[in-house]
Image 1 (cartoon, each protein chain N blue to C red):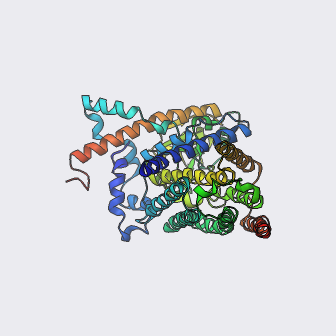
Image 2 (cartoon, chains in turn purple, orange):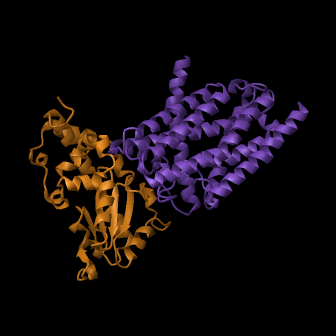
Image 3 (spheres, rainbow over the protein chains, first blue to last red):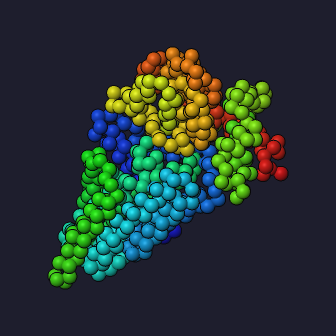
Length: 286
Length: 221
């Protein structure tokens, strides 16, 4: 039964992520006064990339991307089966690190810059991701997601500041403007394509699929804040996920890309103020 | 569609020895004597076979999954001249024409692109640039010459440094006339290029399987 659910998660999570990305592209187009591609466009893109030639730059180049995909899949499985949130966060970080190494593997200046910016972005968002895990532990006295989502009250009530911080760093995680410094999601952007520059064919498709999993992981983190023991709460939690995703699309379309200095400073200020203060206040009440 | 298009895969593997890694693939190929002209006029022998029943069946099966037609990613390059056609290419992306309806993405990266849109004539300065962009694209790929300068050199044809249209350097698949080419014409050109891409994909796969069966591939026994 467990194995079955794991297989279902591995199959269904990217489907959901791909559909979300597709709706994202449609909504973005409508915001710009365009009709936009079909909702299934991300799937067309990925299937096309699977049919194209993959250019090997060197032997390690594609290896890192596949390893990154495996770790991100591992994270998705842990989170959706209600596992340990700390383990999930660390596995996700490891996946990101392998992705950065993939950028470094080719000697292209574009992907080197992309990797450096990705590292900088990780520096910006990792503290908040960790604070989210710690905050959820503080609120529910458990690191296991299945305990957190079966609490009495939703975690958002005790962790509004941490949630705000999470919303902020999700801009990084979902690779949305103004913080899509390392790898622009739209074509023709950000020093060609950052880490993706040297990838083509199957490998590029794998990067896309990794991103779909990451979208699901990001929204699961939002879900955890709203779900409680009551079954109705899961409806609200899903609604919250959709709202958050929509908010990120609005932010994506509403802001120009910032410099990395601002990205780093603002992420740390938000983490320091809204995340830490929330935890300090919480520690007084407990 | 030349023969060496699909020898791409095995050649690359053979060349992925550490000794070769520092050398760009493009220059290596040219050093090995692959000339662009040859590529353009060489007809693959596979085409000369009459179509067998299994062949048709196989093609039919392939035809059902042509995703390249649903997501053509383009790369645009302005060779020289007035830049008008290049602006019209970008006009295709605006809300009025919105080519993203057809899944077209304007990539800035040859490794992601399927279709190379070249505007402007080719001159001595940009021959290596154009060649390199083409070489860096992954197969299957198509070249669309946009505007009269790209098709024949246009009013710049007589210039001392202009060697003519893009077809002097690359195997051009679609010519889009106009000065400047209208966005509608450019979109039409992209759509025509899609049909060619599809054909190239078919040829490539067929040549790959045939060569595998006949033992021409490096890894076939």
